[in-house]
Image (cartoon, rainbow, N blue to C red; front, side, top):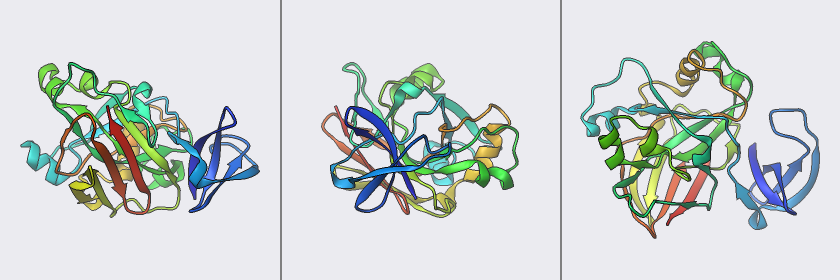
Length: 249
């Protein structure tokens, strides 16, 4: 099942998508709902599929990426946060401030929390997950080096594209993940190269903070990170989910 958020008749609605259409639902996907009408998928304006209270991010969670960055394999997940205002949806623009250079793409698998989650074990994580989406952890490498921490480098408005929907029927542990810039592959890896699995990450984060329905955990990026410049079209593809496209302006 694919959960979407769409703009319909000057209103924002949730729905369930297939390859051709969207069935609108009466409430958020975290609550009880009923179906309410159908519209063509091709004509729908897709938005970010969820509005998180926080985006929990994981650094250095692919072995190949840790090697390319010259870092040791971490003993436990490295967490940081992006603000909700960084979140944009499929087709939205990534806005790079005029004075900012050296901005990179980072293709990532995102986990969407489906219920209030606190202090759970990894084996219990699937019952707390709504599903999975594509994400791009846009990063100013210059500010990351300058500041010595990651809040400003990764926190600008539009620096967290997510979508195109939440895929609920998916095993996340061995999926192909790619990033393409202007149609050329820049990153290519598999989620099986993660140091800490998606379910381990949900468990670990839940022991630090309460995760709420709609919160997103982005799980690290494979090797091959690289620059984006104004005018580029950046695409994150994940097997079993789909494609997230955004233009850099």
